[in-house]
Image (cartoon, rainbow over all chains, first blue to last red; front, side, top):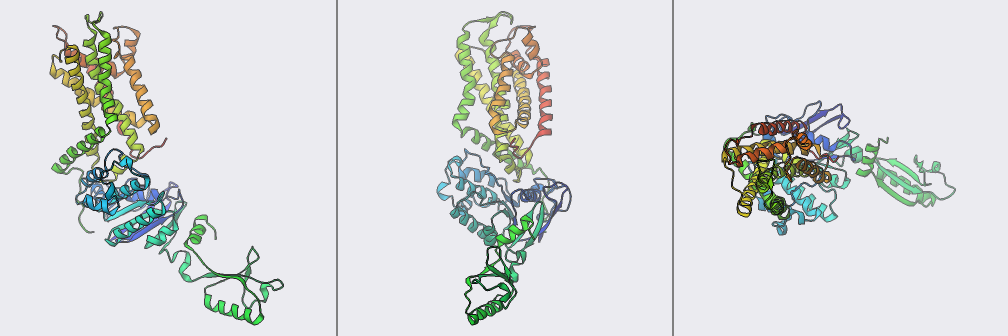
Amino acid sequence: MQHLAKSYGPKRAVVDVSFEVERGEVFALLGPNGAGKTTTIEILEGFRPRDAGQVETLGVDPASPRTQRWLRSRIGVVLQELAVEPFYSVRQVLTRNAGFYPSPRPVGEVIELVGLSDKADARVKTLSGGQQRRLDVGLGIVGHPELLFLDEPTTGLDPSGRRDSWKLIRTLAAEGTTVLLTTHYMDEVEALADRVAVLSDARIVASGTPSSLGGRDSGAVTIRFGLPHGIAPAELPLPAEPATDGMVEIHTEEELRVLHTLTGWALEQGVMLHGLSVLRVTLEDVYLKLTRGEP
Amino acid sequence: MSTVPATGVFDGRRDIRLVGRQVHYEQLSFWLNPVGAVFTVGFSVVFLVLLGASAGSSRISFYRNIKLIQYYVPGFVAYGVMAACFNILAITLVNRREMGLLKRLRLSPLPTWVLLVAILVSTMIIAVVQVVLLLAVGRIGFGVHLPANLVAFIVAVVVGMLSFSALGVAMSTVVPNQDAAGPVVSIVFFVLLFLSGLWFPLRPGSGLSQFSAYFPVHHFIAAVFAPFSTERGVSPWAWNDLLVVAVWGVAGAIVAVRRWQWSPRRG
């Protein structure tokens, strides 16, 4: 089954966003703050009405009141802001929320999954920020959702907390849970997402698998090096461009052949190519290029 | 499509059970904060005891010469209802909205009406606890008899609970943020209480009594006071006062429904 999602709004929040998420997939919406990520997922959750466009979540219109309760029993949501009642214990608040769902995950299992076993009976207000965040995720999955929305799940977590969250998301995905997450971390996308859409200024500017985004899989690399004094880039056997810092760059998709020609020439001529390096396009380069509107 | 959506917002007995369950958790949430709970409930009792003690055997000359304490007990019963339904409810709702708790519940399959009914029922339980405590303190501590007409008393308390709950919800929609909740709600509440004759009975025809006639607090105190009367020819039913309280309640409900918001406002 496919989750078709589309929304066209006259508001600047989301202008023209279209994407599909396959069942069992981890899909990332990547974009800077204010790009419209949260608005987009709030429309998908049925929390916010849309102005135009067609949206389907788990095969139903999320804005339809007729199916809203059905839909909400099958999705899980982890909001950006922590939202847990301070006076309940971890177990109490999870048990309460489990009661909302027709076939919840056992509370003990949830506590273990999010790694709060030794805090199960502690009051929520005594938990650290990272622990509260994990409880938040626990509340998102206690209903055994088919589709889980994670709005910036690791913002504010320390590195080990992030690793734990990633592990949990992978576990859920392996069980068949569809995950739609928003993030502004590139490494998170690379670590988790099967596919990614980059949202910038209320529009999707690119989408695909993390490794193919922005032509990264085409193998294009930049070969950089410095030439000794008295040798001009024009003397090279290949077309090269001078970089702003005095180095020379060759952009190519044929890394091996170009390196072979270049180094062969250098050995023959007895020329030092100092600082020779091969640079690959990172997801970050692509992202910055896309979201800043650079060519 | 995996399964056909089971539609509808009402699911019979399951939802009724859900209301009961949710009321339990609402109560838990209130009493698990012992400082808050004791302070809230104890406040009215402490006030009644202090005022009752200082009143001694004073009488109200313009109120059929009854004992002051006989006025204070119904007054504080009214106060207890208003504190729970207006003050606590409004502050709780603002806090929950701004913390994102309302939004989170909105995104769960818990039906909205179950949540709201549970909150109202829970609020009323807190109000009833206060009413019972205050009546007991009045009876045991000061020898003030219980309401002579129990039906009229219960009707007055129920109308008050509903109306002030509606006003409490309306108030919560007006307060922009968490920091403002306590001060704003309390100032409105205590100023109205002061002007409406809770601490000292208003002399009929005085400027203050004319002013407070526009607001529901004074009328509610009067409606709770009437059923205590044992005198011949004095009606235990203060219909006009109840009507004013109810009209305010309906107005509050309209504002509440129109301005209700699930997301934090962060104003």
